[in-house]
Image 1 (cartoon, rainbow, N blue to C red):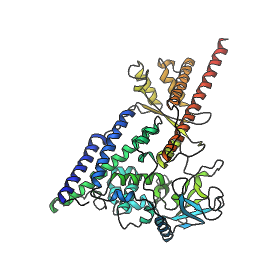
Image 2: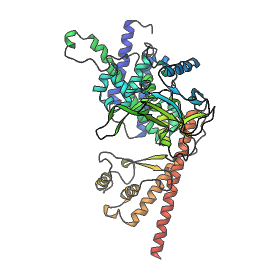
Image 3: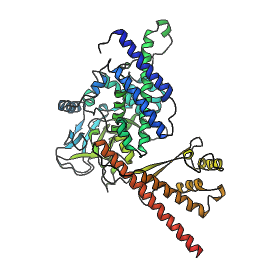
Image 4: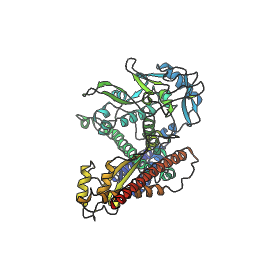
Length: 505
């Protein structure tokens, strides 16, 4: 950070040009459906972002500040700040939790099920309502198409701004947050490879790509601030300043690590609260995303048999505060947990950074079928146009060649419409779709599909690191789902054979 003015100017020019080239040549284009090509592109994106970060690190200490480890004095300062802003704790404190390698809510006394543990007033939360009103992002919320369509992006930008500011009122909260997260967005290349053949591998690459695209887009937007400053007063007349002109961002301090950290913070800690705008036109309560200090320290737990699992976090409109209720009886010295919602293992990993231990009745496997890569359904199929029309009538896009189905747990692992899809897929001609023989071919196709995917996992190695253990749990759960679906089809196929035998005899 002791560079001369000429060296600084040259460095900025280099990394801004790299960001512009990356955005124009790669990130502004639609992602490829080919996973191998997507991986090749990912390595290219990562390489360019690392080069940009290396140059920015010579001009700013942003990344060094983000990587700073949390201290015990940070935690003490956070609890004092929480008390000052009106956050109330009823027999709980925030403490280091070895089980999650982070913080948790620790009971200091016996807490009964449904008893209130924490209340957080609206003024202590970081919400999109707050971000929208701020001088930093007001214009962005009004005019930026990305933020208008994705409120979480606006929240992430607001968080970036608070991290950069030296005098943010949220500093005590930000200082106790993790410096990195265990979501695939933060995985090394080796850890991403370890995800294969899970569908999460592709989803992780696509999410990383989206975050990289947003970063490059906003970095280039910030770069226009300097150009605006250099224009004459006459040229400025009648023109609006760049959208992030009044932000604390510079091209030096707005780094990929900063933006990725903010996105990781939002995705892992977000809750929804009633918005200040009130109800929507149809009378429904308008909910907005928010970070809720202290409350968001409660870690996940799914309690089987709890019929009220959705009420662990609630909002009191009368007191205008969020609150967490104990999901079960908690003894002193035990952790107070909450239920994160009905999510699959993949969603937990992508958005929360972990795969829950034990049974997840809401788990599913995302089955993807691409017709061009599948023999019998490409353009060589003489009935291609007829099949495409039938798929469109089922609700699939006529412009897409990708078909997705969620394969779940239990005795009915997939939606009944998948039978119709498979009938169309294997039929020799449109009029044969409803024939009994076509059903047999369809079930056989599905059975083989699940069997091939199941075998593709091979021997799943035992995870050693925290991330590897999460990936191991994910894969084992996915294999179990595929096995269940295969067995379901085998039994279905057996029943069809028995019916045929009865008819023939």
